[in-house]
Image (tube, rainbow, N blue to C red; front, side, top):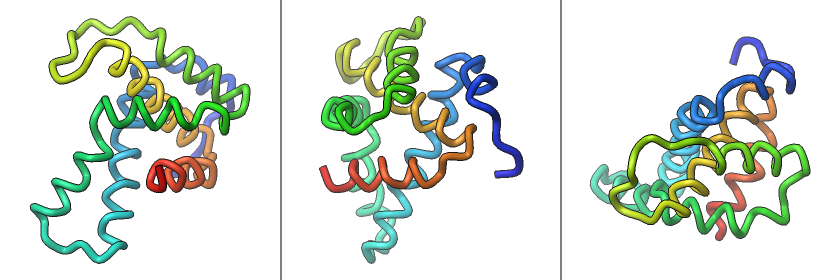
Length: 129
């Protein structure tokens, strides 16, 4: 990452844009974990990754993480959860989709503000859940 944003700048980024960025970072950390656990078959990697990278799982992870989050992070999650979503989720209910979007927005926000160690803490908890 070249230059981090201030919290004020990152708060001005739309929640769905934060989630768009956070989705890729979240998936990167899941893939990195799976590869580090010695999985080398691409099909197995994909099947295992899907267990972590889907709206229902991400929603459950967020619910379990909420007490671990700071007030600043809870505000980002709240904004992400309340973002106006123009698409109808296909494989889950709307509440799970909104919580998954909120988790992704949090990861995107933390990345933009340069809080990589915090992303790693959160992802470590997600992997252990």
